Image (cartoon, rainbow, N blue to C red; front, side, top):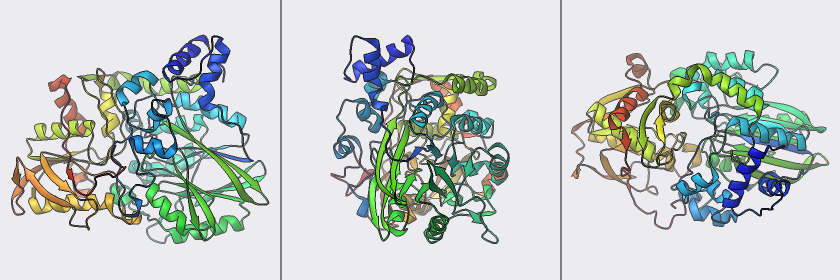
Length: 574
């Protein structure tokens, strides 16, 4: 990777702050700073893996969660480790660039020190460097790529389609992509991606006859080794997102069908079988123990930045399970040694993509500038200035979500507000100007309507119990959504270890117990029903933008968090 003097000065500043060994000679200093990305080639098969970038073309800040609870057999296990617990488990030294990349510790200070992460122009440079050192390497995209920004929403994902082709993606699977509708997804597959990118998903079938909607797998030769990439789309898309957007497609985990596909790929000559998954890591870990013949599962959906694979034994041997974070913040590198037709050894590294350490690829930077130009003024519209850190990730709430809840309560004159537990959304540092682009990073979906509904106390409890079970059911195969719904105005206690229907306790409004038979005004957004689609409503970004313009300056506000029961000492809490 060549460096200009400006590139070198950026590297030098970050490296000095991170305690990297520096030298007076520019070439030696640049080499020391690049050590993070110096991965010697290993084996004969290399796979690069990105996932859940959520349409973030530019470098951003993204705070990792400080709450990611595991329950049942997953309590205290990867990926349910945060903060110092995660650093100790993976042997990462506090105060280093890697500690910042993988934890929320001292986030604001570290973010100012190390700068932004991701960005397709910087990612493109890294991908080119790794592909040059690993002939034949494939770039795999785990999905949630076309959604998550105003630009992707307004272009119906065309910006991401062009960027992914330029990045050199070879194979991808799906989740939020489906929220553009069946016709748009198939149009991209059959026109834009034809001859460039394969979409694979063994678990999406036609609802009538059960025929495959996409290729279940592809076999690509890498240095003479046939490698099968099997697709596993998010199995609960019609539950977590509107069913009406994919009325003719049937989903599900379908691990029995996956076993058939794996066996078929092996029979077709594949010496390596990798599942490109959007299940979420807990589901992948269970699936790895049930399906034979899979060498690795490269996972996504839950946005877990996991520095090293979990090795899962099964009847056929063992399977490596990884998860590569989100927002373009990481690039996974899996190197495999293949001898006598099977994998005999591996190396894995999840590389943080520090924009200050990696020069931007000129061609990709120019493409991004061209894609953004027609919308630049709308994206740059200032809405407010934040004096507090704004972030989303965490099982129960984040300061971005609290801001949306407060806006819903005020603008809808509601008693209670709900906001979806989406994991995507970038972070802003204190002092940043909050622009329309940043608001759309939190809200850009194809069903953005706000609602005001009369609900009984009993109905409110049912909603909270249902979402809580999607997150904390001890069987990963029943974990069907994102994080816990964010709640405004209402206080409650949550016992994640309790049975379904018994996790939500002591619900109170203004200090008074919620009454089961009383009606309450509840504001929300992102309704999934056909009735809500037909009714419509004000888009959430318009409502929140109006609220922000009235606020002008955003001061720190307390998060409305539940009281947790039975979670003391859980390493999923920082």
